[in-house]
Length: 433
Image 1 (cartoon, rainbow, N blue to C red):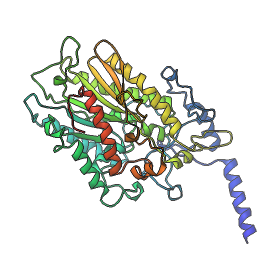
Image 2: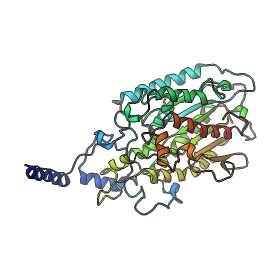
Image 3: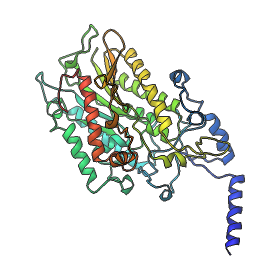
C-alpha cells in the first residue's frame, strides 16, 4: 500500500512539473509554469529606472533581486500576515508587472480596503473643517502619518479591524499601541498640546506606491489653511513659522512584497514623494514651506514569504531556487533613497526633508547633513536599533514578533527615532523626547 501511494505521488509530481501549475496574481489571470517563467525573466525591465541605480552594484553574485522578479505580499488576501508557511494556503498576489508610478486603487472586491479609504477621507474632511487650535506664536505643525500596515498599526488595526493572531500581538496590544501613539504624538503629548490640529494617521495595510498616489489624489490629503495670515518668504529661506504640516511617510515594502524588483520600487517611491510635494505646492500659498520625515524601508525578516514567491519570483529561474530573504532588496532600495530625496529638494524649493535610516550612528551627532543648495538641505538621521536594526535575533523578535510588524514595544522604540526626525525638521528648537 505504501509503495502504491509513493507511485501515485510521484506521478502527480511529474504531471505538475511538465504540464504546469496555475499562478494567479492580483489581476486574476493565470498562466502555465513555463509561461510564467518566460514572463518573469522579462517583466522587471518594463518599469526600471537604471539611472537611479547607477551606483548601486554591490550585491553579492546570486543575491541580486534584479536577476529575476521580487517577493510577495506583505499581507495575505485578508490583510493579515501568515506567520507560519505551513498555516498559509492563500495565494501570493503578484504585482510585479504593474506600473508603480501610475495611480491605481485596489480592486473593487477588496471591500475592507475601500471601507478604510472612505473612512480616512472622512477623517481628512473633518480635520480640514476644524479651525486651528492655536493662534499665538507657540504653535507646532499638524502631523500627518502616511503609509501601509505599519503606519495603520498606530491605530492598532489592520484594514480598520483588530488584527488576528497572525500578527502575534499580545493581549490588549492594540490598545497599548494606541496609548504609545497618544504618549508621543497625540493631543495630550508634548507635541500635540501645541499642534495646530490633531494628528492624522492615514495608513492602509498592504499599501503600495501606486495606490498611495491614488489615495492622496482622492481625498487622503488635507488642504485647509492653518496659518492663513502668513505665507512663506519670497527670499527662498525656510521659515518654520510658516510651516503648517509635517508629513511622516513610510511606503514601499509592499512593492517588494508584491513581486516588484528594487528599481521598480524605487521608481514608485520617487513618484509617491514627488506627488506628495506637488500636492503640497499646489494646495498652498506661494512659498509655503513643505516638510517630510521619510522613513527607510524597515528591516523585515519574514523570510518564508520570500521563499514562497517562487515560481513567480525566484533567485534562479532555471533551478527554481527561491529567495531566502527580503533584506538584499531592502538594502538596495534604501541605498537609493538619499539621491531621490536630494532630487526632490532640488525640484521643489522651500522643502525640508529628513531621512530616517536604520544605519548606526557614525559618531557625528546622530545625523549627516548634506547640502542641497544655498538655502536648503536634506538630512539623514541614523537611528540604528530605534529602526529595528537589531543584530540580536531575539531582540528583533521581541519588538517585531511576526518579523514584519512592530508591537507596542517596537512602536515605542520607533517613536523615538521619528521624534528625532521632527526635531531636525524644527532646527532642534523643540525638546520633547
